[in-house]
Amino acid sequence: MKDNLKNYTEYEKSQVKKYEESVHKETNERLSLKPEAKPLKGEKKPPARPTDIYKGKGRIKTFMSGFVEAAIVAGLVILQFVFIYVLSYRFMHSAYVYAAIEIISFLIIVSLVNGSKSPSYKMAWIAIIALLPLTGHIIYILWGRHGVNKSLDDKVLYFIRRGNKYNKKDDKVLEAVEHRFPAKSRMVKYLQNFDMTVSANNKVTYYDMADKAFEAFFEDVRNAKKYILINFFIVGEGALWDKLHELLLEKVKEGVKIKFLYDDFGSLWRVPKNFKQMLEAEGIEVAVFNPINRYISRLYMNYRSHQKILVIDGEIGYTGGFNLADEYVNLVNRFGTWKDTGIRIEGEGAWGLTVAFLQMWEVSKDKECIDYNAFKTPRKFEKNDTFCQIITDGPANNPRNPIESMYSQIINSAKKYVYITTPYLLIDDDMMKALVVAAEGGIDVRIVTPRIPDKKAVKLLTEYNYGPLLRLGVKIYEYNPGFIHAKCIITESCGIVGTINMDYRSFYLHYECGAFIIDPKVMLTIKEDILTTLGKCKQITYEEWQKRPLKNKLIQPILMLFSPLM
Image 1 (cartoon, one colour):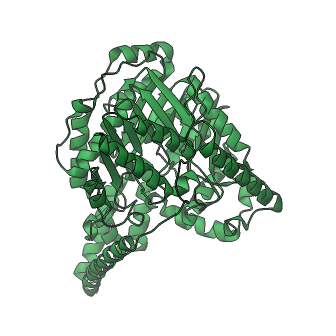
Image 2 (tube, one colour; image 1 turned 45 degrees about the vertical axis):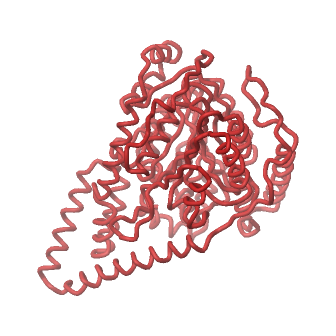
């Protein structure tokens, strides 16, 4: 933390320290005394939490098995790469080989220019091919060309289409949206083209910190009767996992079915090698998404499942930016205070999260193994006009990317303001133009990013993107107390809360999810949290941006060439 604060002024350091102390004090009080999350108006207060939410101290535990596996994979990949390179270099002096490489370069560039990917993405690959004449070709052929992951894409699309059959459209709900929020019905219809159905009768609770979301989830786990579904990108052993594990074992004894899904790459260093087998021996069903492969043609460091989904009995669902590890609930200090957010949906919208989970479960199992109807709840929910549409997206949809399109549509639909929180800001020209046009049209556009980064190269690129936005009226703030990992975009009456970063990975390369919510009351709750957060941020001005260090100015344009790949 001290190293991360070295560029702060003394005043800023004092403010960070003061805020950290208040947050940690509030967290300790909340864990022992206070109720879970502040309910929306009209909701009943949840019961008080027990005093021993987490047993033991928070910790970040890494396992040698993960490092060994990563080292083996990396070593084999390097050997294969060297073999291909040496073989190719040996024939480089041949005029025929040189001519062949030139022809291949030309064909690749023609294919890229005429492809349907974003201009920034095309430019990145063209730069790699031009700067690395031989190695760049190999990298592109292995990981960049269209259809390189076709077998995985086809499998994902098959199971998504199979699951979408159970997302039944309700014309009455669509009519209600058109009546109450006519300007938003176009977005709802757009998503329904992807079989993402809109639901009514939802009670949405927003959590401004991840520990509040987990505490509510723990209470829902205790009350589970039929099943619990859990999907995370990162699972890390620690106090948070210990508590959840304890609760899950209790539910197994009660006969509750539990399905636990996690991404192999995201959790590689954070769980033991026998983690899956251990849970299965305890009666928990486990699936691992897209296991790391030792062959370079199938080494999917991208194409990960970045989704976070929790479902209880098909009645309650959660999503947000948080993973299952101690840093997300501030039990350990990695980058100062870690701010993450999430939502709890009790109502018909929980079915969308159920379907999204089951789709990725079957992808991971590589077979039809789910009776979707067995996961439906007979419960009838209290009628209301809180509309919710669960959004999922991923590389199998390229070049049709509903999540990226929805971000643009939400920005364009704003009447008064657009507020965004994101840990990374790596966007293409079209998204930048949407933000700038909104700001120039009088919309209050504000973006909150971290001041303390978790990835220095990405922080440099995020900072580089500030310039054109600041110059044309977009307001940008950096979160002083630590690392903001929250991911949301809101306007006066609608917004998205979920797992989506404003970067190329989320828009094109990873599987993501979120909840598109139409309800001014919910948006007001989120807005209040963002405004409170702004009070703990430093606003960045265009003049300050221009005075950034010279070394940043030199390296940022070079890094920008490769931003779609980072």
